Amino acid sequence: MLYRRATGQRYAFVVIAVTFFALLVAAALRSAPSVLILPLEAHFGWDRATISFAAAVGIFLYGLTGPFAAALMQSIGIRRTMIGSLALMAASSLASLWMTESWHYVLSWGVISGIGSGAIAPVLGATVVNRWFATRRGLMIGLLTASTATGSLLFLPAMAWLTRNGAWTPVALAVGLAAAALIPVVWLLMPDGPAAIGAERYGEAPGTPPPAENRRGAMLAITTLAEGMRSRAFWLLFGTFFVCGLTTNGLVGTHLIAYCGDNGISPVQAAGLLSLMGLFDLIGTTASGWLTDRYDPRKLLFVYYALRGLSLMALPALDFQPTGLLLFAVFYGLDWIATVPPTVALATRHFGEAKAPIIFGWVMTGHQIGAAVAAFGAGLIREQTGSYLLAFAIAGAFGVLAAFAAMGLGHKAPAFAH
Image (cartoon, rainbow, N blue to C red):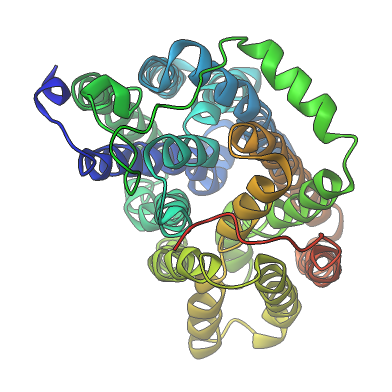
């Protein structure tokens, strides 16, 4: 394998690059249902609530898989876990080409893709950074987190273009082939840790022994959850991240294209707005990682959640004019998932370096539960009232509440070196 020829701490950046692209593909798969809503409605005659339910299932399982995937990475290794999840992602997308019933869509794009993409999620980034970096962790977490949101949004115009004539199958084919193409890359370039190439973590003194590995697998995820549930910090992290999911990929990521369609904006134009958000998220979330290395993460979370909530409340007042939508896309993109680096930092501070990825996996489950609630709930609200206005107002109010909840987390010395 190619990585066996490489030595030294700098190989950590090769690992970051492979992880970055894997997260891009997984995020693109998770965002694809947002461009499939209208084509599936037209092709199969399924209602929006049914289609939204499949998206909600996928989002929920994406989050629920995270802590078990983090434990699995400690048990069988990062490389094997990534290959298995990429295979599931490719299989679910390609198998959907033959679907004819709505439950086929729930099974392929909901259940199987949710489990597959759940292992290649922000919890993968937390595990990789903790295993490969002793310093600059906040910056690396920010970069990998940015890839998740960037993949969710950056490829949306291309996927929307593929559906321009009402066809949905080109999107499934593109996502499936992209996931399959990454499997040999991970096989060749992704060692399980620095010890596999005879190196230490980046920034670590030579000769430092590698951290002890825990091979209890899924049981470790359960015992870590039980420990976390006894802590007030866990529930505050879980609750605020529930709101994070509610206000990002669950609501905006899933329904903004359809919301814009209700206001006379074409799917390609609306996807362009999401793509612009993805571009600015790459800047905002990487900057958030840099800030997390230097400032109190609780205060960062307060700012992020408060501004996000207020922007969601303001969106309907913009009347969907080009200038207002452009400003919303830039502003919201900078804040899209900037919450991850400070949340990972707080998990590490309260639960320790070894357990932090698994704790973050469970916190990420809260994120995806919130996203699933918004994905289904906003579709249901739209079905019942004919408008998304109430859904965006509720999400905005939750964002403001989360800002104040974040300040309830105890303050400790910084865990991420700089």
